[in-house]
Length: 320
Ligand code: BTN
Image (cartoon, rainbow, N blue to C red; front, side, top):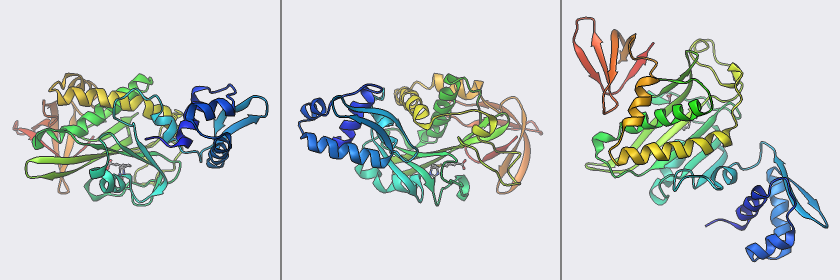
């Protein structure tokens, strides 16, 4: 159920660049004109730039960085559940931690988004540095009715959906199995998938995504391995990106649940940064040189050792 404030900002977004009278908003929402005025003032305080003219009404002209982006992300979003609810935080420990807290009581597709994370989590117990206005940090709650053994494919599904969205924007992205997105040879995004399950039943899955969107100084040790889109001269608006990503993700997710992984596997194989190359498989600190042969239908990596032995890699890390 949307709040009156959210309904008002939605009306202003629909009528962007033209005036809409306080009277017509109050009639539409069946609230007093004083209440409309009060909500407009609150929206202005939040960072929406709204022009008021006595004879004409209100006009949305823009927003500052402090404005809550969740209204614009979800409004008229072309999905049936993904991203329909966005819980936005200026700062939080981790969007994955918050999504875990609310998952049982929240509908599938609920998103937790933050400007900054103080305890951002990466894979394998690492930290994901998440300073304010350096990246896009969000988590999505999924509740798929699938067998437990299918769950690891979710990370692949997200990697493929992100890649498809970047390609739609004309940005050449590749995927370093299992969870890194690569631009010009350097990591620009990572995925952290966490699951809450009983012995034979998935309660929910949290998919956390971190994308280096904005200008960022990387520490010396990772300078050669990581970059951000802004550092590479590419401007991406996070609201526009999410409004493109959620429909792509929902579409591939629905197909996957219906047993159709073809498009996803096509993207994983054709945009892979590892297939057809000699890479290093890293497990428990050990680096082993292997040839990356294929990605199987379960999303596992098939590698060939120098001895000729073929191995299916289910999880772990690959270095290129
Ligand atoms: C990795 O490459 O190690 C995965 C990084 C995942 C980072 C994202 S940012 C949003 C979400 N919340 C977290 O604490 N982590 C994920």
